Amino acid sequence: MGKKSKINKTCYCCDKIGIGREHIPPKGLFPDMRNAPIGYNKFRSLVMKTVPSCDEHNNKKASLDEVFIYQIVSAAKFKNNSAVENIAKKRIKRLVESKTFHDKVFKDNKIIINNGKKTLAFRVNRDNFDMVVSCIASGIYFNETADKILPQRWIIASNIFKNENGGSIYNDEKYEKIESLSRLLECHVQFNSDCPWLFRYFIYCGNSLLIRMVIYDSVEINALVPDWNKT
Image (cartoon, rainbow, N blue to C red; front, top):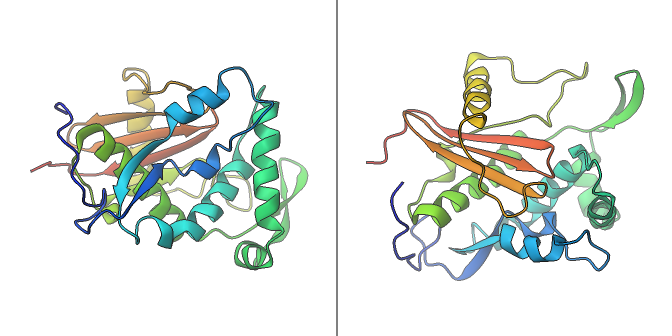
């Protein structure tokens, strides 16, 4: 990747006019708070970037962002960041109290046994999840290079999805290659972050383009464009 060129005024995902600014990642993931760990609010502002966006890739996907935030916070392991955990879970509590949100997310929920414990499982719309992550990946790449990647080019894989037995839902060769590549690169490529326990990522450009993101130091997401050719 070369130096960042001057960012134009069209959307980071497409060639429509950018009528607003999209937060990358969605700002609802990192709520502002008073009793925050030292440095949280400062780094929160550094973690989130904004990119020019059309209405389709900003306001019209706001409801998808809310569901995505719920999924991430529900799956995260906050470790020693109890203050962040409390604020984040208050954020999703307000979402769940909305009947529209509740019906949309929990209409297919059921109790399952995971690691010997009862837990509530709900069906995830993978297409919607992948769309939000693809937009985040496109936004990261645009912010770094000023080049655009259409969201539909990305292949997404994450460690938050489990089957009824608690195992990974990814069982085909395509996703195994994504995971093995990301693990290999993680040992050799430096993550980009001012606050790694909040959000970090790296970009790898080779025969494939890979963006690996880690949210709340526990949720791992890989976005891959296979057979990458910038030209």
